Image 1: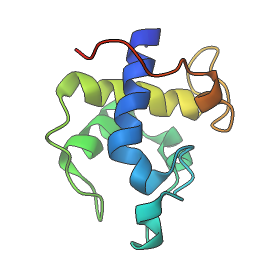
Image 2: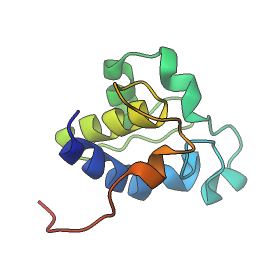
Image 3: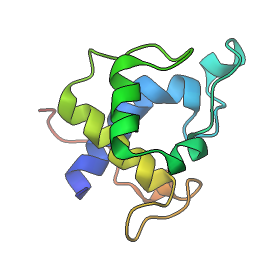
Length: 109
């Protein structure tokens, strides 16, 4: 989980995950106000990386499948979620992580 992965994971998270799970993973995104049952990302702490990866791609319960997210982008989102949960070496808490990430920029791959 290098800086490139975290930077891309943040960008992908903001696009695909943030509308429901919220900017800091607190299940307070704008879509969550209309659909009950969105979970905060802290519940993912006890799940494996593979479980998170599969949940992104195939969905789970009320969460839709996001098969259009590339395989690498899914892993980058997993890394970013781990970062927000403070589960990576040197990671900070979810409240501090977004401010600690570099600003979006540069060419897209």
